[in-house]
Length: 318
Image 1 (cartoon, rainbow, N blue to C red):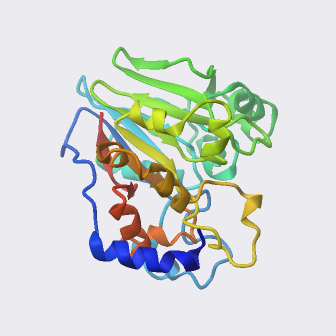
Image 2: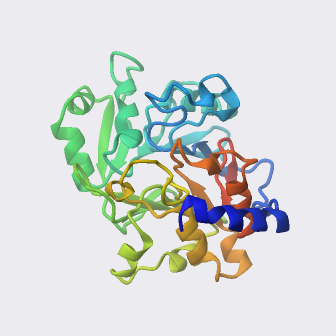
């Protein structure tokens, strides 16, 4: 389905239903997952896009995709990041405002998905030239951990013990507390330097599926893994929404950077029961994605289908 052919569909659905209610969250909870960024690797505005209105309108800006897992039980705040993005400085500041801790950078660990620039390059700011962090645990699958250990400047972080690598095993849970676990799993996506992980984040009461990058749901089908089953097993699903539809980037062959278009995902998930569709929140939106605008017909199209977009600052109670 192309952008042009969507116009009529979007107009019709927008008239029927402008917004579907997002999953209700408690105002405060002891264990939570906060969306620190919902943009693609380069955020919005993107480099070399001087005409992007986000340069002059801060409300349109989006940070690269990142999550903060926070456990405030016991009087303090244990904090973990998912992804170390180029925007890590601003994202940690958001955490310091929401859940302050006495020591900087105040991270109990970082979980990485893969070695594309928006997902790990923020680690550089933990080095002695900047934060001078001491022993921050970095959880990564084997190839990702090897890439960091064997290549500069990341290897220096390991040698100087700014970070400590924890090599995970796909399918094996990392226990952060008896009732708080993070389980990595393999995802089919471009693997130039590392494998690609998704995460199942399970708290005392709820669980979240986090897949910011995947080539296609069909690639998983070929492995007899079905995204519908993964959605059913979780309370919230933060899924790859990089591009809205075919033709989004004029003059570019979009097959060179495969992601499931939001329109394709919406079509696939539409037969699911309403309670399943309401779990879906698209994340990792490219700067060209019109659904970044909460008032756009594309966002209304998503909501009319019973799904939504993960908004920065949103918090999910676990």
